[in-house]
Amino acid sequence: MSDVSFIVKDNATGNKASIPAHKYVLSIGSPVFFRMFYGELAEKSGFVELVDADSGSLLEILRFLYSDECKLTARCVLRVMYLAEKYMANGLLEICADFLMNEIDADNVFEVLTQCQNFRDTEKLQQQCWNIVDLQTRQCLHAKNFMEISQGMLNDLVRRDTLNIDEQELFEAILTWAEVKRRTSCLESKPQNIKEVIGDALSQIRVPQTEGPVFFNFALKSEILTPESLTKPRFFQPNCSHHGSSTLPVMKRERSSQFPWQRRALKPFRCCRLSVNEPPPLFAPYERTDSFSFITDQAICISGVRIISSERKVNDTYTVTTKLSEGNRSCLSCVQATYSVKYDGAEGLPGFDVYFNEPILVKPGPKYFITIFCPVKLDLLQRIGKKDEVNCEGVNFYFPDSSHRQFSELIFHPLVHLW
Image (cartoon, rainbow, N blue to C red; front, side):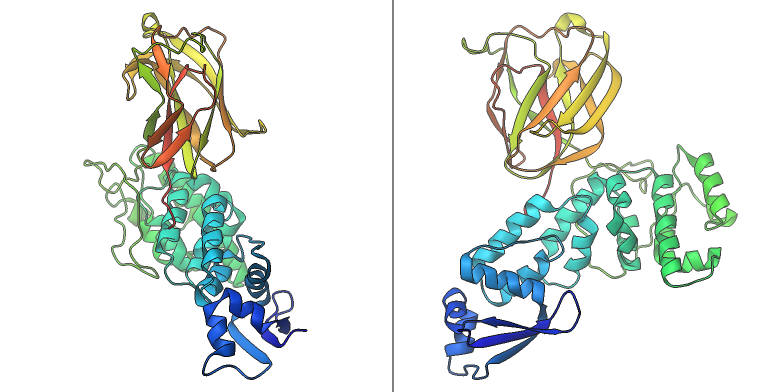
């Protein structure tokens, strides 16, 4: 009993498709549809062609207006957001925002950034995406979607001061991207063609001070960077002109005064979960534990954890294996290293910091576990209490296990709220 059909582009075939609907149902859920079908200039035709929608995104907004449900994916969510804003379906906008906050990761971040270029008012969303790129640069560059980014986005990427990756590895990723683009464009395999494909991003490559000779040899072998360019100052000076985008937002970072163009990793924050000189509750006996769990209320990146020990163990060294796991105990990261006990950290307790190889994205809701494996017992201080809930930098952390006191701090990077 439909009384209107929308003509849109079909996602599968590219041809026009007709999707039937009911004016009354749409008008109840959207004031824009109400004016379209029942206003003074109401649409009398039974067919409405939408040039700014496709079948996938339109079906999702219809699904929401009919049932208050939707089936979002990273590929369609921004197009659905556009229609939700256009037709003032505010509830759907909130669902899209929550979806993006929970679903953006290293595998799809460049796809979301690419789609952001087609929509307005996505600055906060772009900021969250670029923060993930800064923190998980290596994972992002190994994602399939990295090979599909534009030359302008590549320039935006390489221009950032806060990428968490070695310069040679970044240069190798750029060359791989350029080779894919060269083949797609059917260009001859020549250094000059590769340079043209890379474009302005080539001037953003910075020669690392500590790895200069190794980088020089690799760059010369690639025939992309010339001996003349490698004899310039320690770092290639980033091009100050902006191509293809407005000013890109970046998080708080540390800069080197001696080498102002050196890339610097984003400074992490520390969530302190212990209370010094406060005895544990009677129902939580003093004991050593090898694992603890935590839950957050928003997406963050976990960089590491601080392990504490007793005062008499200062300057002792320990070989420790540390694992970060999801609630189902699937391992997200594992690192093994030798550490020396020192007075450090935000609370000044004796212990050592354990950093994972790269910040790990964790999502709100699920329980995560950090576990250590050490052949030697790590004694604890005698008077330490534990906080079950901590707010740090706007992130709420929950620690549901009462007796786990070996882990004094979570080292993390917050991500920016979308709305």
